[in-house]
Image 1 (cartoon, rainbow, N blue to C red):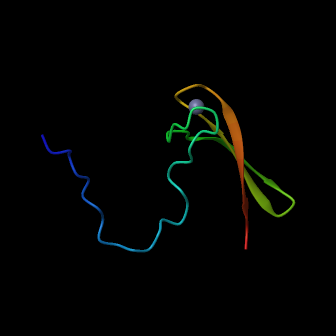
Image 2 (tube, rainbow, N blue to C red):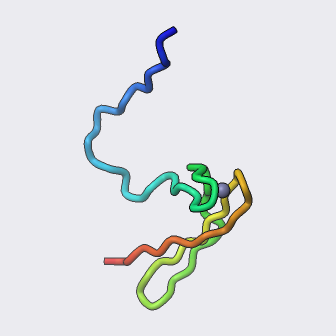
Length: 63
Ligand SMILES: [Zn+2]
């Protein structure tokens, strides 16, 4: 009963933006972007966790 191994992609460069941000409440990795807004030169993304329904925001600085 060997654990199923995920096949790692050959690319070493990280994706341009994180596909999944872990929910701060339940730790679920599935929290798609609910909406995005620009604020003071930053990009604020509000995400909604599909596991527990919690909404949380992530801030990305636009270079
Ligand atoms: Zn959650």
